[in-house]
Amino acid sequence: QVQLVESGGGLVQAGGSLRLSCAASGRTISNYGMAWFRQAPGTEREFVARINWRNSTYYADSVKGRFTISRDNAKNTVYLQMNSLKPEDTAVYYCAAGLSLGFRLTDFGSWGQGTQVTVSS
Image (cartoon, rainbow, N blue to C red; front, side, top):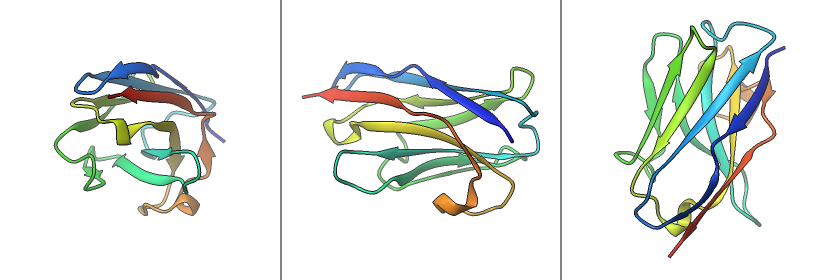
């Protein structure tokens, strides 16, 4: 099992940027698909971005062109660079690791505890 710890969340004004980090331990993530999900109050957890072991990336339409997912296998860490933030990006952001190729919650067996991102208008 991979243990994941997110960091980097906070309060930012609309149009600003944040970079989230997800530090993994317990196993190397080099063979894992890594993803970010988010959950706003009263809503279901939703897919944001994914990077597979070949560094191919996939994004939700709502963040495409603004967010960038990347990984540093030497540091066992995944990042989410978030630019041009909007108030609707406000949510708890979760890092996830999985060995399948899917985008569903059930495709990921390891989850972090989440980090809060708040975007003010």
